[in-house]
Amino acid sequence: MGLELYLDLLSQPCRAIYIFAKKNSIPFELHTVDLRKGGRPAAVWGTERWGEVKGRSNTAQGSPSPSLSRPAVAILLYLARKYKVPDHWYPRDLQACARVDEYLAWQHAALRRSCLRALWHKVMLPVFLGEPVSPEMLATTLAELDMALQVLEGKFLQDKAFLTGPHISLADLVAITELMHPVGAGCQVFKGRPKLAAWRQRVEAAVGEVLFQEAHEVILKAKDSQPADPTLKQKMLPKVLAMIQ
Image 1 (tube, rainbow, N blue to C red):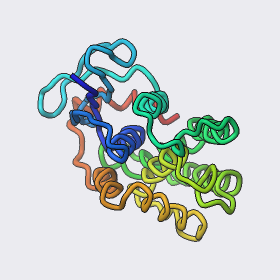
Image 2 (image 1 turned 120 degrees about the vertical axis):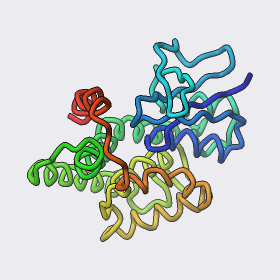
Image 3 (image 1 turned 135 degrees about the vertical axis):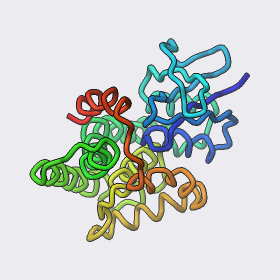
Image 4 (image 1 turned 30 degrees about the vertical axis):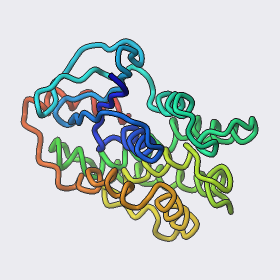
């Protein structure tokens, strides 16, 4: 048995892993899970599992899926090394590698939080969980997102083709999958930001437009999510509120 991926493409890290594996022709068996119904993403390599697989939860299809017990970035780095993908994804050159690491360290505590909050405050809380979000809270969230976008463009992208240099890297892949969260919520992330808009086009072209659209089909339909049933809402709401604080 080879690599098995348990993914929900509603999730930013899941989309990054999916695109990376498909783009680099890494063989894997895909198991779709539904985070909105209690499913959990994971990566399993035959008898070698990424961390200890704890508790199981049922997907919409009723098949068990192990929980992910390591950050998705760690899985991306593992795949890059194990399958010897092209060097530009995670360079062997120390300085080039450090630039990718710098972005990955920043985004986890900055851009990811802002994009996640934008999706939940603008769409998922009011539409999926039926929880109102005050105009003041939403305005604060969108202002935080705007500040993160300014750093992304001004500090990392600048006048380069990609975030860390002339070629696409894991930094770009992780960043674009994060940004598609607020895009899925209806935020005009790229409007008035021509450098960032042009960068998005280059990233999409580099991974392939068909693959890019395939990976983001779910998130772009987030606004059409059906309301959660009361039992699921009661179970999910405390976890969601803790996640987006």
